[in-house]
Length: 323
Image (cartoon, rainbow, N blue to C red; front, side, top):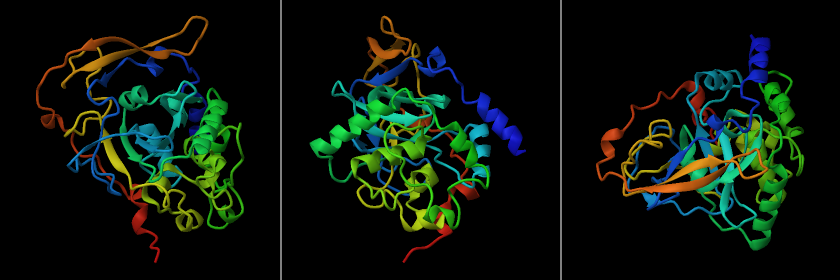
């Protein structure tokens, strides 16, 4: 079974970082381009806990994302983890806009920095956000940008990710105490690893206790882990607020796949249609606003999706209790 999974991972995610399906056209709501956050909760159930607040992003915020793709769900089960299965970090891009740094962008084997308003509205699954309690200092912000620039366009640490499915990994009952520490800027990482490597490089988490190569996105969501070491050293427990469910439409739980995309009508006040366009001489498309859609003023609460099943591996919090 494991050789089959390894062979599958060498083909999927896609090795094409520039295909049009990897950069789809999306709507960015004009009224709230960064969407809304529901009230905080360490709960994966997709519940719109009102009142919702308009999301005011800051560099250092953590995005925890979940795609119910059956392939990835099966892979996470082998690794003894579950939802959410992907992570990214909000960074200040060199042009001053906010972006998202993530390894494995849209199921590719590449690290990408994409504009935050585009990426968060484009993601095809569910998004939770852990906001920074204290804004970054100018020096911390500069170092985070430096890390993101060095990581952008890098390859995904596919080999090390595959090892997470085997006994030969840094995540273990005892080995995590001595293995899995930060590698530093300029390396190859998988998603949660890259996020924590960036935080360690900036100095937002303790590099002596951090274990980027032994931490999964689920550990960052719950501040608990099936791994004893990570459970006693949760990287985001100090400095980040509890996770909050995100949505582009206030009062809705519609995920990216179900939300309208161009050229369908937008059920809101109005939205900008953003398309991927490759700049002259470049291969990687950049999100470009091509027009404004007035939108249709109709209720969105009746567009709720059925609740997602929460399995055993999606609830690590009850397995280990800290005093």
